[in-house]
Length: 226
Image 1 (cartoon, one colour):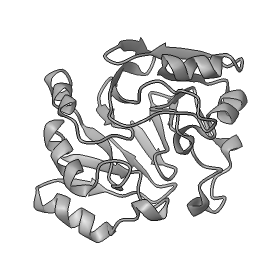
Image 2 (cartoon, helix red, strand yellow):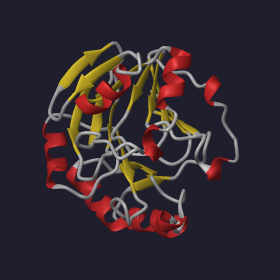
Image 3 (cartoon, one colour):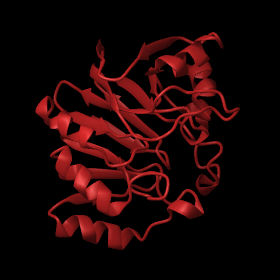
Image 4 (spheres, one colour):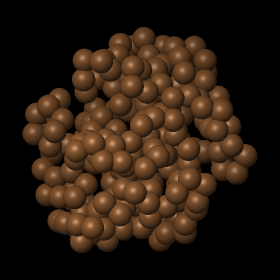
C-alpha cells in the first residue's frame, strides 16, 4: 500500500494497482503553488469524507477525467450522480467489499455542506482493510468515543488524523484518538493550509514521540509505503 500526500487532507492511495484519491482539494490550495496538475492524477475511486469545499473541490473534475467512482454518504453521492458521475453511496456503519479491499464508513463529528450551502449529509471517515494493511482515514472530526469501536474489529497499521485544531482535533486530542484506535503510527493532515490551522511541526512530533507514537508530516508529493 503506497500513500501519497497532496496537501491538506488529500491523499492518493495505491492498493494492488488500484488508485484511490481521498478528499481532492488541490486547485484551491494556495500552499501548493500549482505543484500538481489534477489532470495527471490517477483515480479509480474517489473517497469523500464530507462535502466542504476543502475536501471536494476537485472531485468532479478528477472523476470526469478518470471515470473514477465517487464513494461517500448518500447525500454527497446523490449530488454527483445528478451530474452524471458514477457513484457508490454508503452510510455510517456500512461496509462494502471493493476490489481494493473492504471499506467501512465510520462516524465523524463535524459539519458537512457544499459551497452553495446545500446539505452534504453527515460527515464520516473510512476504514480500509486491504489484503495486507489496514488504515483509518478520520476525515475532519473532533475526538469521539466512537473511535474506540474501530480496533474492536480492525487492527490498524496506520491512522490518518487531522491535527490542525480550530476546525478539528488538535495535537493533544489526536494523541488521545491514537490511543482510542490503538494505532501508534499516525499520518497528520488538515494543518498549515490556512492561518487558523498552522502548527509547530517539531512540537507536534515531540508530543507524539513523548507518548511513544510516530507522527509523520509529509510534504506535498511525498509518499510512504506500508
